[in-house]
Image (tube, helix red, strand yellow):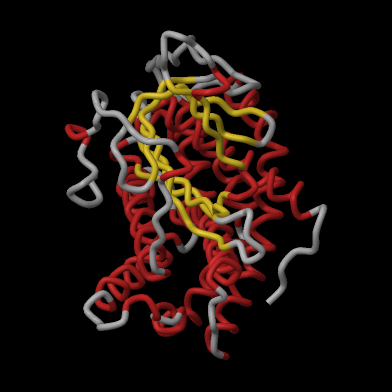
Length: 361
């Protein structure tokens, strides 16, 4: 499913070149950032709903469906409404000064209630997945380890979204000295409190994931009488992420092939060059400065919105947002890197916050 005309795989740009990260800073309005963020989130939700929650209604009983997917359809509808509201606001004269309340106020009450309900039942959702994953794999004819990973990502998607949305608001306040009214402040604070709950859930999920994955791989496949199913024997558990070749660009610059590595809370982009002089060919992104990570599953692309400091030599340095695009060749690499990056970014933020006070609105 494609999002926008400028994101087709046929225009991937493998033969093009790009300039360095330091020369690629282009600011966006808050409305543009929220629209892009919410649109990709909604499209990913919709894909998961079409692939899993709706088809499984034919095979699982109603209680299992409710426990597993909760109120995900309602959350999806809210996100769709927010996207349409953002698109309408683009018709206004002053896009750069659109307040947060004008985007979210109409749905803030039902949105907060829906996410509160979703967060409170997230443990039950994972428990139900463990109980039902064998028969889900059988009914959908998909390997069980794949089912476990994908539906877990589906369950965690709204939880990650609320954390990233809070990060976006906080960063915008810091970067642009955003002037907020009372309604804006209430919405930002409600989202921040939800994000605190969501972070606890994500940390717990990360801690339990390795044991859960091993348990999934060792479990037997659910089979109907006289039916034998085979699972793939090529699944490999990796404790460390390995480097891979990707296409990378920043903002709207051309794509360039690079080697992607994760090292010491930094994301490294190593330009592919015969001389192999790494010091002069490597650019990096500090993970603690990543405001949020966006998914585009249709193009196997990740987008990192990064807070970059400009004019460091000046007493009045400013912060600008840059968008780093990373496109993968294979779906399994895309999924693996998204998972590792999401947790690495959160870990880098936690380490950073331990050295300074967390911003409180």
